[in-house]
Image 1 (tube, helix red, strand yellow):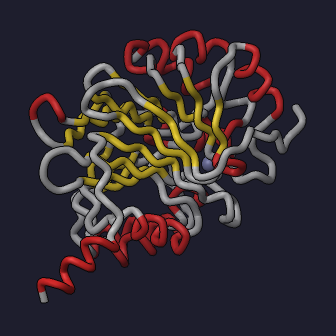
Image 2: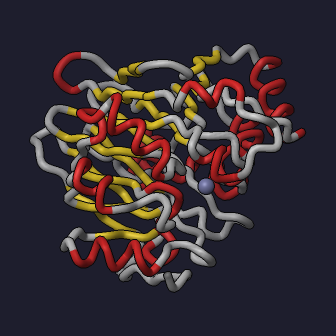
Image 3: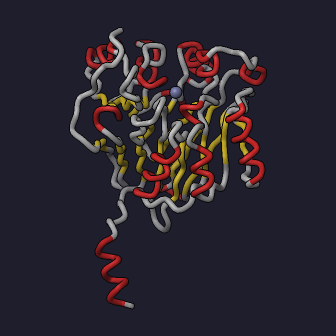
Length: 296
Ligand SMILES: [Zn+2]
């Protein structure tokens, strides 16, 4: 038995000694792409995991979570009720215990979305509705702890009409700021200028970040000079499906500012690593530059 355990230990990949890992998962193979971001705190003791969105392809996300040795999700956060963000969640809920679910509470009539909310209720998963102000989710304790700051969409999202267009739903995204010591990463969901402008008024300090996950998959309505002036990112990660995203104008804007940019459709899963000793790095599955898929 001991020999078997030793062999198993040798075959298993070593646990990453970093305190915080943010993996922007490559879900570019999904039908409509989307976002899926795995946050792992691998500080002292057991690794804790939080999933932000699950694209529309649950099987791809489940396979990646298994590859990264996820056993339980301390929380799942849904940025906004579009299928390229929640469509994969039913598969995730079937395969992994989920301790809490946070979302903006924006009402939507889509049958698949209503089924997701029923699924969460039937599993007795505690739901946190981030519809006002700011909520904090802390992983671990003490100086190594990681905090996810969730900030609400605008109050008008509480009563968004069922027939509201896609842009209006994007503008009801929950923002997430991942913090550890001096490091911060901003994930604005698919928020466009309208919601970003509101956040700039009510939460300007929360927008400042070392790494920005570009809003709305690198569309021109998700990244603009005003946002970059507030965030002042040193790197940008784009979760894009490689068909219509990212946009050439966004890549040109980032290049003109000399901001290193990484795209899942080209480089695969992108990992932001924040070690205990300080500093942070970004690595990708493949070495590749970002290619625009929409020429404006
Ligand atoms: Zn989206």
